[in-house]
Image 1 (cartoon, rainbow, N blue to C red):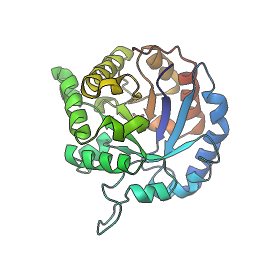
Image 2: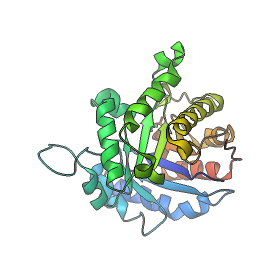
Image 3: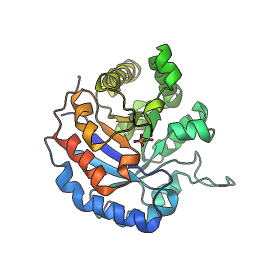
Image 4: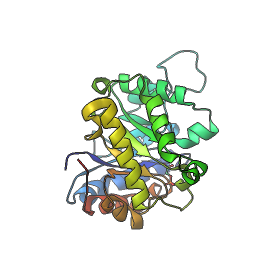
Length: 265
Ligand code: PGA
């Protein structure tokens, strides 16, 4: 087992501080037992900014649970109304941030250029980044999904070297048509895209493809997580709706930790 496996819950605009604290505590209490399968799974949650402080009380270094932001500004400080930069999320106890989620790209103007600057900022600050890429349904139907995803990746990573990134860059393949729709990519579709991403990384960054964690996201549930991992080359999940209840997220962690893992070299 060479690559780190992750399950990260993206709570989006849900959970006020009290609910975030309760949910994070329940996850933290169950995480050691749920993640101790055939292979170890690291578990994280990404609450809204308002609830980071409350959730933090249940997270590392107190427990094994990692804390992430859902988005991050491209600069640390200054006249940037509404922004929260890498230094601020680190101060709030985050180990890193999601960057380039499709909801940010589609609804809040996160262009490929802005995603690149946010990614650069968060990695340069020594934090982890969960870089989201994924095609829309039209691209999948037109058969251009691989080129769309590789273009997103190459634009996001264009300023970065494997040395700067180290092990802190996690990639999440999230087909837009599977997010919040109940329509999950098949194991074959997800695994094929993960192999495509890994191959591209290998060509671009020499060894960086083989040791990079690539997660799948899009309507992951306790009852489909195991089969997705078993489809091969899927190193865990970024989970939206099914992460809002602690038992459901823990069930996904358990399914991930106990599924037979097939990792291409
Ligand atoms: P979903 O969301 O699990 O609710 O489909 C995934 C995501 O947006 O990361």
